Figure 1: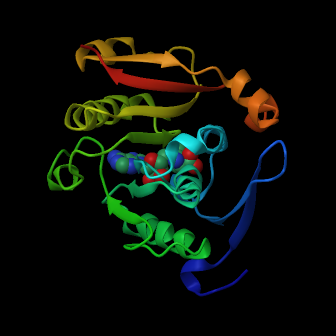
Figure 2 (figure 1 turned 60 degrees about the vertical axis):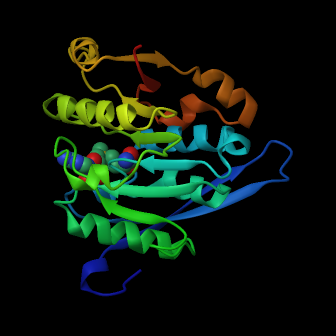
Length: 229
Ligand SMILES: C[S@@+](CC[C@H](N)C(=O)[O-])C[C@H]1O[C@@H](n2cnc3c(N)ncnc32)[C@H](O)[C@@H]1O
């Protein structure tokens, strides 16, 4: 599909979420660009987090959800379709990535600034962008944000800040394991956080989806981060 220079080599992918009884279904359209940047491609972990959003859909109606490092934003767009109040974010230093999120919102008939908010939020840069989010988030989500050990502390410190200012919220994050040497234990301790593993098998059973299949040969975990008291 060819729109203009910026959207050269754009591919539109369809992602379907269908309940077991087939009574409820959502089709999400995601535009991907063949350029060498992380934010224009839907990473395998995004499908896992989106499946969790679908599994939780009844509890998420009307909830305030922030997606960080959203990239092509599959989980957040699905949450908006389900009826959550969604803010999608990616690095404020990547205006093309933020414009691409706008494009994906429009593709799914969600008006940026009205049906869904799109904001720049850069991990480790705890300035006004973070304060402007207020303190009424119910949930923070992120897929494949911990993709490089070099950015772990920026992500975890930003999550710690958000959880400190949004006392109802936890951070649910799909994590693709890329190296068994990487560990977050020390950072969790430093930032006063704890983390638990969410059982993917029961999500698969409940939604009728083979989660291993969805991972496409990768090892992906779904983790919930929360503040230690
Ligand atoms: C591996 S991609 C994952 C994208 C998307 N969540 C997915 O799973 O398909 C990492 C994402 O983090 C974003 N990112 C990288 N550095 C960032 C930073 N310092 N602050 C906020 N987002 C950042 C990238 O732009 C990209 O969208």
